[in-house]
Image 1 (cartoon, rainbow, N blue to C red):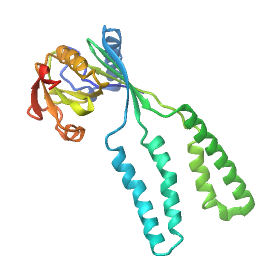
Image 2: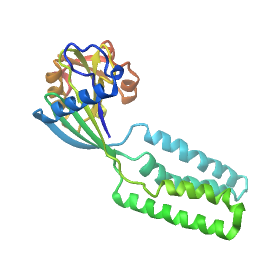
Image 3: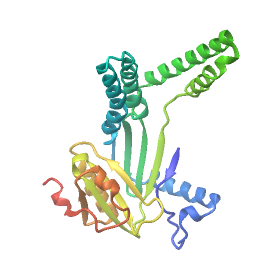
Image 4: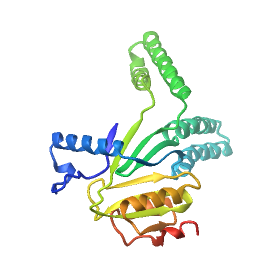
Length: 264
């Protein structure tokens, strides 16, 4: 999947990209992607990132049935084990399939940023899920054959659900962010996450992007990015949550910092 994370740079063109016809959007996006791809590379890196909200969501989704099960066992109800087992089974499913880490590949050029990302799931996991899905389809079909029409209510639904996972495979997404050097940018940083976001001021359609840096490379990436965007300072945030909640395309947010303060 390809996306262009920028307005069309078409000189006098003032119409936002999303208001143009599909043919015009496609032509502009193709030209922008080509320009970014063919530009000299400033820095290129890969990084695996765990989303900051994942531990909280997993704790809530897994902890709730386990606590319910523990409470039922405390009240001498053996049915509590059902909730505990469900919680234990759901943990690897949620952590490694639904809320898996993201693998990013960044290529920063003089004309923009190319971001390629995918779920950091081993290929073996996809193979296992597809195998279990086909097994589930077979079991459901056998159940309907043995039990008759009454099985359609449960087994039929499960069969449809299992078929959905038979084509379970890794998906790679690509995003292009084109630098519009005729406009003003604001760069925002979360040091403890080595996370950078840069926005155009004032905010326009899709004119912002996030990028994660490897440990020890934040200064290098930030200095290169600020140079290309013509920024003299950046805005510092204490947490990723505060950055994501900050308005896009607004300068007066966060704490203003100079580049030489990044390591302080």
